[in-house]
Length: 419
Image (cartoon, rainbow, N blue to C red):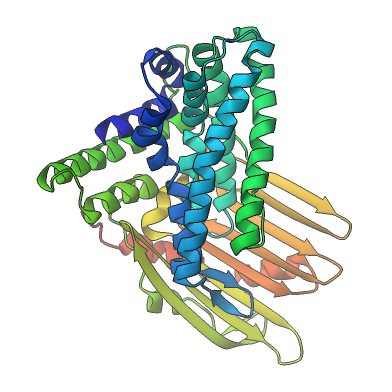
């Protein structure tokens, strides 16, 4: 396990020096699967199960929807198995294309290129547990995987450096097609939806292969020390249990990945979150409330929501999500500094930064509905959605929520011991 954690750490933080080591290692296709791929590719499916069957998905004016545990497990297992197949198919494409870009065909090296480049995307897959910004973290992880592939192809497939960009572009297109097919299969069986786009974190790499202070990589390097410590705990647990680490040790490892530098921080109690929901919002009386907290794999999250209505068709919904022990993923979204904007006739959808906070807006003028959400203190996601006269009305409603109380509650919260 320590070798696995060390390899993940090195390929993410010092890829320029790690790729030559990877390329020189003797290995087999089976060995790559059993020592690396089966573990890393499971992170996304596990997060998928937690999101849809344990934590649930908030639906405006309806409540929180949770997929049945059986269906959730089936969806996660299906996506896991298909993912295991997809990475091998991608390696076949990488191998077949090698001569076209001056490289050398080698099936094992091609699987190395596919698997180790996919590491960033696999780790970012944990972000599915976070409402409405999980895709942003997926963007960062996915595009960083593209960068890793670009660095790795000259070493694994012996492709000339000047042809690595074209080689990468073609193989990435193939990967996108494969991902679309795989997610279409899973979606057809369990869900309606497709895979989102991917983007790259803004890290600056020095010539020695380490990250510059203040970059995404530097923050990840600090994060990785906690992951390494948790990995050692898994090793010790395995030694004491005839090679099988305890669920608590594995949970602590996943928690270290998810929590970042905020290990041991619990989400606020549901009643405390509910107390921040105002009696009225934009002049509308509160008609219903709900709150819950869920814990799994070394971290927990909580949410509270309220519906507001005038009884004549005007409705708003306020949601407060506390990422609690999963703050590391929210921090990753902040470090990535990724912004996006989409427009269509009569509406738009955009995510941007405002004064250090991540903000999400969506507005449809034809239905006069929208949503406005802000990440507060790199931990709380506070969003208002519903029908209004304009986006300004939603922003004004959001402005009446006492987000300072959330920050004060977090500041007053005692720190729990790590592990």
